[in-house]
Image (cartoon, rainbow, N blue to C red; front, side):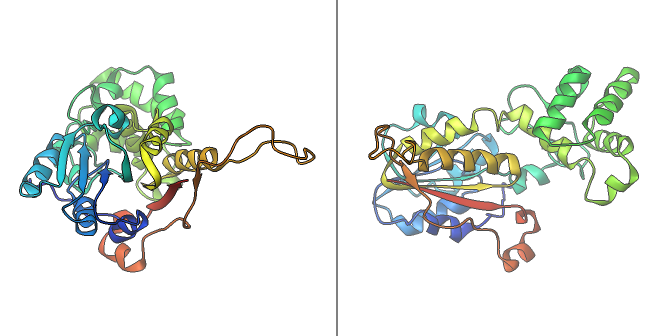
Length: 303
């Protein structure tokens, strides 16, 4: 299967970086290279783009797509480790925190509850699979994962149903897991979208460690920016968005002295500003790509 991905908020995200010729830039979740290609158009071949992805299938696609582009350097890795991978200041960084269309549509990757496959969820194809977690985590840990990472209000009955089912035989496929989740929630909950959506998202986060350390990773990327550089992040749910908002609040905070003080003694000054309002997909984009419906672009500029 060819690595293909419908790029979310493509031109809006690249434009938010205010790209200009030259300099070093980073696409920390390059995937199929959609954002990378648009950024390359904007900065020209005098600059450099570091195109990162943790998925080996994405890396193969990126190497093929940009084989004749010396301005694009493809690296396999997680943007959490950007400091160790890139040793030059950046003029702009963009991140798309969603799962790719390829990962959802590739049967053997196990990201979708609509396709029968082994329960995998691994973006890097390394480490513990979602199936191993489903079949080995104790009840309380399953409940925690579903509640904290999936914000699933039926975490208790779902975890209980999984533990009971696996006592008879292992839970082996995505469709088996999805049906089990559906059977554990009230009928009314099955009408507001697929009942397994939050459980699958929670397992994906747990397998790939996408939320643990996200704020620290965003702060690291901000530190790598040159003054005037921008960090543009596309989030897809409230937990990702909360991390970006918390980082924004921290970096944009100014003096904390009480208002009655005649002058500042804390010495705290803002490190960043928010140059634009959050951007969501247009109606035209949603018609082309319904998977973009929950996307939200937030931008920070380094002062």
